[in-house]
Structures are given as C-alpha cells and as structure tokens.
Image (tube, rainbow, N blue to C red; front, side, top):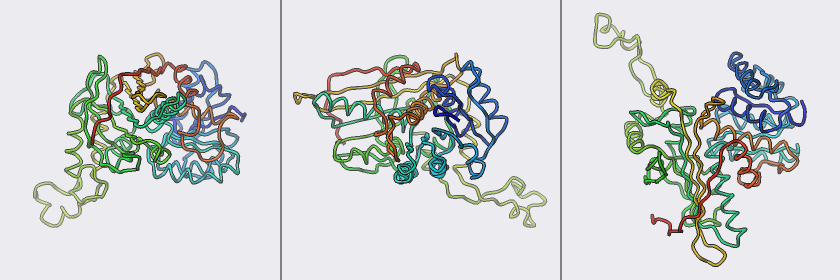
Length: 420
C-alpha cells in the first residue's frame, strides 16, 4: 500500500460513506474496507468504486476481534478509520499504532477516548497519530466550537461561553417519537443515559441527561426544536478548556415532545442494562394444561430491558424517510474593545439523492474522513491528540465546503447567557 492508502474498519452506513469520501476527496490511492461479513463489505467496495468512477476500494473479510486477521488487514496502511462500535476502539487504536498507521474513529464514549489518548507515548515512538471522536457530535461540533474560540481570540477578544446544539432528524417526523434511526440504536440510548460533562463557572461539572430542556428557534421549515442534555457530546473539550472558558455545553435537538417520551422509558426502567427475569417464549402464559408441573419455571429467562427496547425501536424507527442534520455552535464573549460579541455557526444538511448517502452519513463519516486524510499528511501532529488540537479549524471548514456541507456564520446581537 502507498502513502495514500487507507483502511476503513466496518462497511456499514458510516464506513461506506467514509470510504467514498476518502476516495473522492481524500486523494486515496487505495481504500481497504474491512468487515466480518463478506457480502456486506464486497457490496460496499463495489458501491464506492461505482460512485468514485474508478477502482479504488477493495474488500477484506476479517473480524476486528481476531488479532491475526486484523493485523493482515492493517498491513501497509498509512491511516486507519474505525467505523465499528466504540467498544472496540481502544484495542483497534493499539493495533493500528502497532502496524505503524495513524488512527481515528467515530468515538462516542469519553472514557474509552481518554484511554486512547493514554497511547500518546507509544504513538509518538511509532511516528503516528491517534485522534478519537471524529464524527458529528462528538466530532465536527467540537471542531467548529474550538474554531470559533480561536477566531475570537485571534481578533483580540475573549471567548467565554460556548453552546452546541445538534440533532439528526427525519425531514417529516412520524409518531410516536418524531424520530427515525439514523445511526446505531446502541449509540442512541447510550447518549440518553449517564451524565453530561460540561463547564460551568470554568469548572467541569456532571449534569443529568434528558434535563435542562429549552426551545431553540431555526428558520423554516424546521422552526422550533427542543434541546436537552445528553452524554458524550462534549468529549474531551471540557478538560482542554477548563479554566479558559466559563461555559461549555452540548444538547441534543429533537422535534418537540420527544424528550418527555424518552423520560418515560427511562423512569420505567426500560433503558436499564441490568438483566431482569421474565417469562420465556415457551414457558406458558396463563396456566394451561402443562403449566402446573413446573413448565412455566423452565421458561424463565434473564434479559436486559434496554436490549428489548433496542429491538422494538429498530422494528419501528428504521423507516426510509429522507433525513436531515441540524447543528448550531454559538460562541459568546467580548471583542477586542471589551464589547459583547457572539459568533454562531449553523449547519443544516439533508440526504443526498445523488449518492444515496443520508445526512447523518455525510455529517458523521465525512468529518471523520477529513481527519483521516489529514493524518496521512506530514502536517499532522504525532502522538495521541484530542480532536480539538489535531487539525486547523479553518482547514476543516474549507474541506466541509468542498463536500457540499457549508457552514453558515452569523453574528447576532450578543445577549447575556441564560442563568442557571
């Protein structure tokens, strides 16, 4: 493989879109797609080649949990992008560094990200980079936030408050949740649980998820959306900017009414991971002829409520409706004269019928591919580096525009931040 040779782990929605991006915009000479399902990875490679108009993608069958097979798949790569579930990313980062390749991923779990960043000395010794959390949010949202902070500082001002709002939505909402699955359901419910890491008064604070609901206005046709706290969106940025920013917050956007329904699921225990015992399929249901002799007991099973909810959500929310992604990053502070100032970046992206990629694929996989391509260059910092310190923000914004994902910047009249 050459210096413009990439490996993409996972050939599902995001992996295929990332491979396409590297082929079309990342000047890839080869993109090796890796997946344990032969039919899936071969179809993904064929789709990328068809869209790129050249044979650039190849398919490799390997399970990322098989160290020997993974080593063969990574051989000769300049940079590796992980589009598999976040639980694998720490071991995959280690494997990429061992193979002499830079590594980035879609992330989604800050504890795992911090463990990846602990590979700094090893990555430096190998002359490669490890940059986690490079998708949409965490990912593009964090990069835009840092870009605005740095812009304000370059202009002689000071950034104090950064608020990020982001959501993937159907263009036409359907009941019961006004939502469709635009990425893995496991990642969705993971964001709804746990704690959100934010900056308040310049210090790191943990706040509950599904709380602090507020209305956020967008232009037509979106109108008013609801925003609420979720976990994972801020990634490592609070730790990087602790004591430097007063406020850093991230909230998820949904159509109005969504959060209250998710709270009901949570409060009923239906999003709990701990298994509960219940009646199995063949245990009888109502005391028929075979139920009295212990037949019911033989049918008892233990199951995670969240796993059951996942199956129900996949059955009802995985419909084919064109989607959109809406992202707002607002940075407030003072300008060089000490006057209040606010800079707002808005991104609204929609499914692309020309390529068939959804808005969520475009705004998650494309940003990660931008990072991956940058890591293959001589300009990339070596070692394990948080995304907010990995690449120039203005470079990232230019690359987004090349992909038809423009960032609309405004400077509305600055207002004091809302009290808590």
